[in-house]
Length: 138
Image 1 (cartoon, helix red, strand yellow):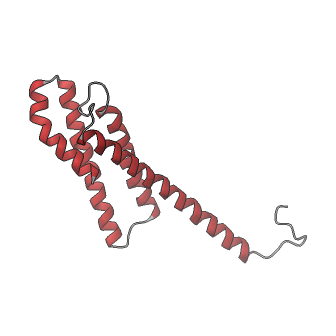
Image 2: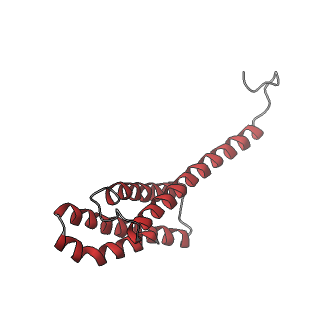
Image 3: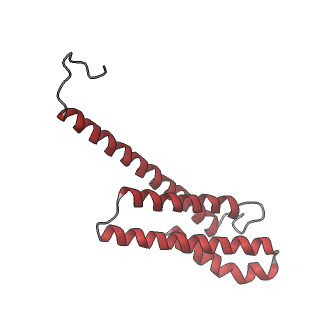
């Protein structure tokens, strides 16, 4: 949701920002539009994959990693001293909210992956016959 808000706000402000300010600010505003479009598209792909029951761990991690990376780079570029989101406003909060949520989703995906691996190892250990000496570490 924050990707759509970021893209919409940057598109709304594009004409005024590019007409009255240096080219750096206009390019950073275009970067905000690109972040919103890319992450919005990735979110749509994720929704379709979940609806079709095709969302696997790799696709989940890949989508959340790309979204997190884009939003974090957006926070760095857009909220810098000469960026379009320097003051508290819609672009500022949507870029930070997107970075926080996508990073939390990525970390949650990694935790789920490690938990799944631990469960598989535990089940494999239960199916293995015990060692002759009763010690599995040797």
